Length: 68
Image (cartoon, one colour):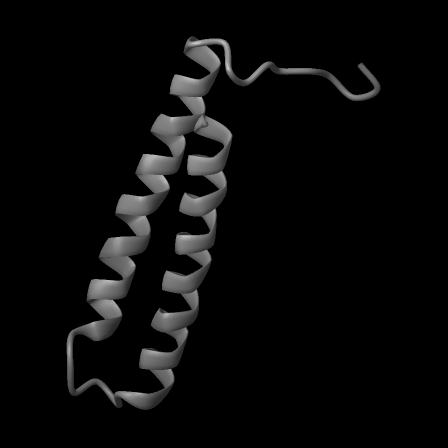
């Protein structure tokens, strides 16, 4: 379940990145949509970080080395 949440969160981060790029190109500094997009992306990134650590803590995600 946590892996699905991580993937969904990562997709939302990418969407927010695209929206921010679009607003940066089209708004000409007339609105705060770029700042809102950046704020949302930072919040989603923190959530992703917390989800990864929670998955590791609860044993849903297991670290492995290269070739291991």
